[in-house]
Image (cartoon, rainbow, N blue to C red; front, side):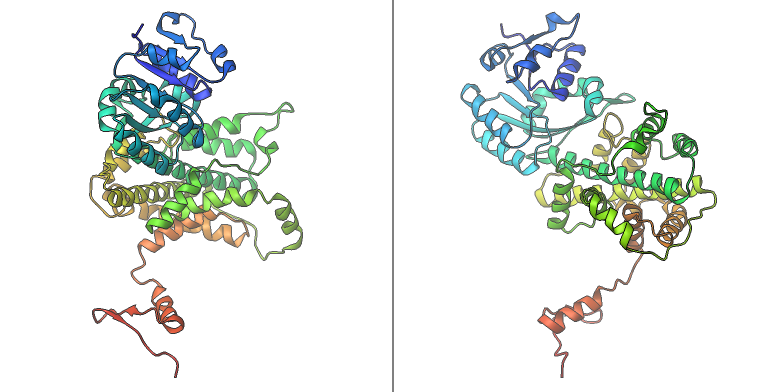
Length: 462
């Protein structure tokens, strides 16, 4: 009987949570998975009349209202192409296929264009918020088919997180725009996580603070401009004790993993010529962390001239340094999205995008209301906006934290990169004029002058 509103294909952690979210919000869901174990596990007590676990894809498709909406929550990459190929013979013009995984945006653009030729509406939707967000309300960044968006937005907006009365779900742009902004969202997430971790490291290994003092500092930051989901869970992590009643975080190996979106973000920044140093350092900090054995050897063999770390009023200064770093991270991500939007003709509304991130997603914070405001000013970069005029008041703390940490021989690449990002914005004269002279000297690459138009070459060697 064709009376189900939407199908959810893939019943892993995220897929099953999204399906339950839809059911709880009053939609009738046809659930399906190739995994028998996932199908057997899926259940929602008291809502049995609102969903069906389909035994075959044919049953799933035949149970849907027209136009049929199929929401894929499966592993990115080849599995998505495989499922689309499997579904395609049974799809009809006007049907909507939504990919809610972390797919590479170029793959999404390719699928969008391929299916558009066949009359199928294909959407790539970035979903942020983890398992809890998927169940209670994620942030959703929809891209691809505008026709598909119009036909499915009543479901997507209903299941999304809400900031006050506004759904944290919107149409971002065509092709792979939705997955692009989710990719950059993850890059910003990398940066903020690294900034928080470095700030914790300074307190623990630079200032040698007791665990309770560090925990108290993070708790106090929840009542400041740093208030955010990531600061909230920082407190949660610090509160967790192991079986021996010592902080569990101290038992965790200092090797971080990653799933690829950070790497894609860096590749995009290089291709588009956008400077994102804090995201860069965060991605490579994870990469270098895997060299644990080398770091142990280096600790034994490489001496340093560092001095003991001191920092008066550390809670205030570290908080201001961290805040400056977070602002720089948002600025870097938004600059990359703006450049991609311009070059791809996506016409992304950056202010609306910031609205979508205010609830539900991993990088949500009170700061995003100021990010939203800054993006209405039509400045080249939010670092220059009136909304963040106070960043100049944060700069002294960031500079003191970075210089003193360097003097203590403690590496904090993300915080240092945020300071470099700030300083680059205020450097009217950069040293690259000398780079251009050297390039012209060894390779006749030419250069521009400050006093004449055109390109010039000099015979430098007599």
